[in-house]
Image 1 (cartoon, rainbow, N blue to C red):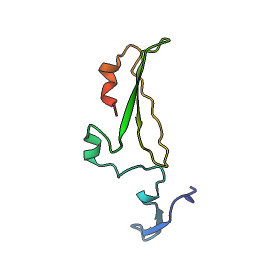
Image 2: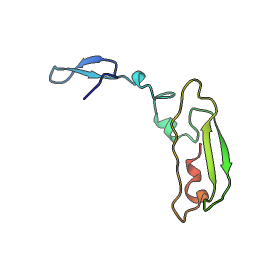
Image 3: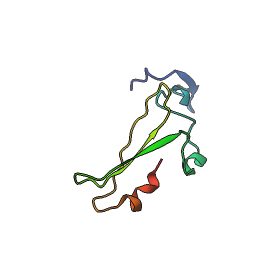
Image 4: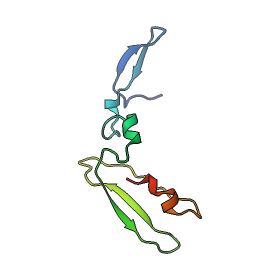
Length: 98
């Protein structure tokens, strides 16, 4: 396994061999603090967001786009969530909001 992108942090394993691992600070994709139970249970995350309502049209029932308002010099990934074929957003998707 190529681990060249990880900062080398040796430590001794149980059988006294050196092992190389990466710390969370080495994760170039992480944004904000490490996840914690309180953050997962919170109604809002650690980043400010805004939303845009998308009207229905062309066989699509519309939706809501939530996005960060300040990413600084960083980029964020995107996730698209759609309710099932006969589902309604108010019943199945609204809880996934910002």
